Length: 270
Ligand SMILES: [Zn+2]
Image (cartoon, rainbow, N blue to C red; front, side, top):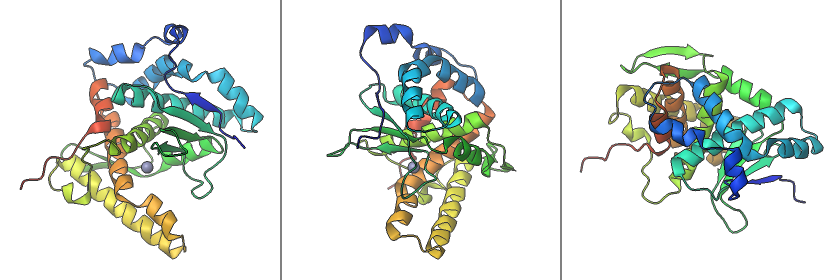
């Protein structure tokens, strides 16, 4: 039962590259101005969306009974993931899967990175069912916005829709980075080694995931489910996602934004 309409990233055909000129790649190389999330999001939609064959994807997902609003969100999110992946890793070859249904074990999941395995090609999934509403919930989540001096500026429902889409994209691409040889990722012990802003974000994520684990244990969740949500890879990806949202909120130059996918903690002193 092949349920997944599958999109192959980076099709090699010439006419595809003409249709989707690399506005994005050329834009970020010599642009030194700070941009907010809306500007980066709009640039991505303009330059990357056509690669996803949106009309065919829409048709297939409608056939699966998905709602227009969820399909719109899926196309926007996948354009962001595809563009972030493309700029951060350069090469194509990963698959971008629009998965019509919710995740069976974790229905709140909106996107996933899948490393290459026996029966699975390397790529990203976007879960379409209920996506619009799940994205709006993320906008309302209390993501801390922390000043460069380490003081919490605001802690409220202040993340914009574009910040949510771009944050999720950085998060998923970060999971791909975690699978690359030699990548060093953030853990709680890095909190005192990094700048105050990042240190606070690391402390926040530890606190958030500690509570998440406790809540899931109280609810009697299976160990496997808890471990899939609270683990070192998820810790690191959340740190980088929240850092990205903070940078977008401050305004960030394109190159620095895409480089967040591969940010590493400082080397520990021996
Ligand atoms: Zn994750």
